[in-house]
Image (cartoon, rainbow, N blue to C red):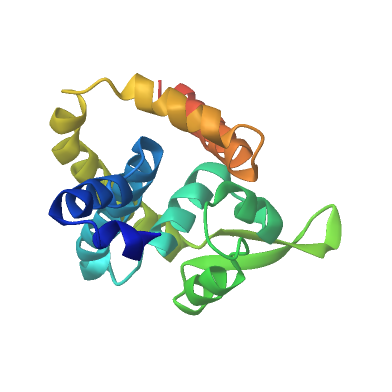
Length: 181
């Protein structure tokens, strides 16, 4: 069909290009979100480089700072990560001396992960870097109605495993805010 349309002349070619090359609104939003995530990850990678950690490792440190001790599975429930299992991340953090693994007091078969003293220090530094990044982007975000986008994305994710993860992170953030008041 595409070849036939092209054979009818320039006007058909223009109409065809507009029809086939334009993005559907949700497709464009998805691409923008993916690109924004990649840019955010690039900026975080750059910001955390002096600390010698990745954004994914920083995320684990900050979660443990607020919710330790956690089993590997519990930690995985807090992460939005490909593969869904944080064992390699935790292994690298353990090798760097940032986390420790201990048997749970109530079940010796269950390993719990918590921050070491060195991990608490680096988690504090990570949080400072994160707060600076958030402060730099806040003026831009405050110019826009983010509630509409948030509602769209929450509706889209409704019933998915990610909706549960986001809700867990919200509760963790609320708990952290309440403790600091």
